[in-house]
Image: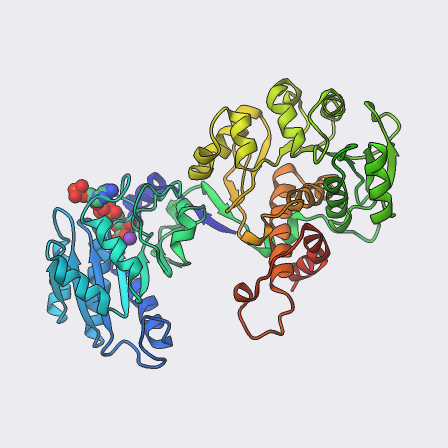
Length: 509
Ligand SMILES: NC(=O)C1=CN([C@@H]2O[C@H](COP(=O)(O)OP(=O)(O)OC[C@H]3O[C@@H](n4cnc5c(N)ncnc54)[C@H](OP(=O)(O)O)[C@@H]3O)[C@@H](O)[C@H]2O)[C@@H](O)CC1
Ligand SMILES: [K+]
């Protein structure tokens, strides 16, 4: 698990640690870590236009230094690189400059120029192999002001490798919100702990590869606000069969999906549940959907139902909503599953129904809701673009107001439950934005719920494996020499179902 803490907790931990540390020790540790990552990039030839092995000596490094300690970190790191032979130029922005950092840079042979000298700044940025963004760190508030915004734009257009100090300037550390211009980094070197804004879009999309430098804050940080699960966590959360398993013990999800008109969603949801490891999947729907599901998934036990599920048989979790329609018939079925004391996942059309019948969510058993931004906006009475721009805020609010575990799908999938850190899913690909993909996810999570996982574990494990299956399906066999991201091709939801076993296999190596 990777842990992220909000700025208030970072500041408190910093104060506690500083009280026990020599003056300037934390900044020295931060700067040394930052310089070391930059030196590694210069040595490996990943930075800018210089070739492999040319290293730090003779490289051209530009520091964008704001008025706070973030600028101080960049200046000290620049001094370390200058001592190793880099040509370092600091572009100074903001009302003041970190004096100790600037003095260190100058005494190491670095030079500085003022951001008010646009020609000089642009020329330096255009000639750079590597740019360190030290404009703003956790002290940044709101959209970048000038000259920071212009400098961020120049940096983004340069061919240099951009390394953000602590976080990309213009990204809000606590939320990942970007208002206006922001630096787009190739690598972010963050100090002490991850910041939530590095995990969640749009901030995550600006951070590139994130490297954590330990500066000793750990014992003082307290509980994380946001976490990023890793394969080992998912391996614990996704229920697997034990020696005593039989099909009932492994879990029996009931899927209530599809209708006379919409049939594909049901096939995808049942497929997700079967490949998610359910011992047996029960499926209930209108006749035509049942026929199609029986044809594609003869393993499922199906029932044709109208407005009651009394004939469906024993299940230990429900998945309700994909392709179900939104009329009275759908409402009756949803009311029935939400009236049980079993875990229930509500998705798609089911979310439209509960948006007008919130009372259905007043229950004691776990409920998982899996909306995309538009569906969450409808549940909360706001607009989809507001949800997209401030994903963490909205998913937390939804969990609180609706009394459910809420998984918000999208560019970064985030999962909230009251009293717990938000879980951010690290897997996935934009290729997953395809019809039916969400239905697969609902079935997968349903399988985990029926296997006994808690609501948040089931949701997080489902999102992780679904994202990984999407990536594996999109990138094809690993024998190709190109990196997986470059190999990606369009996929269908059915391809994602097919790749779920391979995704499981990666968990245990
Ligand atoms: N925490 C730790 O343990 C450690 C932290 N460390 C480092 O300290 C960093 C935090 O430093 P910090 O507190 O000095 O704040 P920081 O982000 O440099 O800048 C704040 C200044 O920026 C300005 N400004 C604000 N908003 C703006 C905007 N929108 N657009 C333009 N300008 C804006 C505003 O200045 P003013 O308005 O006065 O001009 C404000 O004073 C942290 O990220 C890490 O790098 C490490 O050294 C080691 C240990
Ligand atoms: K920065």
